[in-house]
Image 1 (cartoon, rainbow, N blue to C red):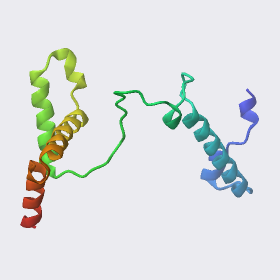
Image 2: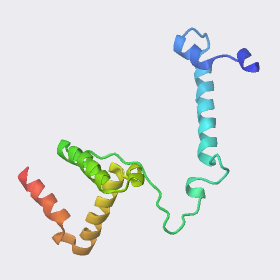
Image 3: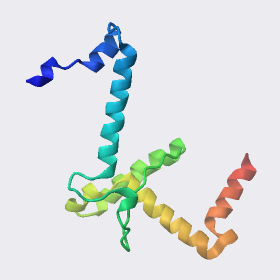
Length: 133
């Protein structure tokens, strides 16, 4: 019940009626910063996070990445996911994702590139594409 007596920082900021908006803004910034520090320094289960955690062999951590795909590839990716879902057992369908398909495809392409270098399909297709433009 003590929370009712506290100032509503967000309300004051959004309404713009507070005489001390700068103070409210800095209070909000401190709160956000303080909350961010707590969240990034430790997981809810008490284990260390990020750089503090030792990488284990075979640890497949994921990183978010944004890349642009042509409309055709984007549609083909949806179609591939649907076709793969038709081929796998019902209980595995939830594990088939576009991210998983892209990850596996890149793994295969990069492995071939590492093995064949300039004679790989990756280089051949990139050069074809560049020459067309």
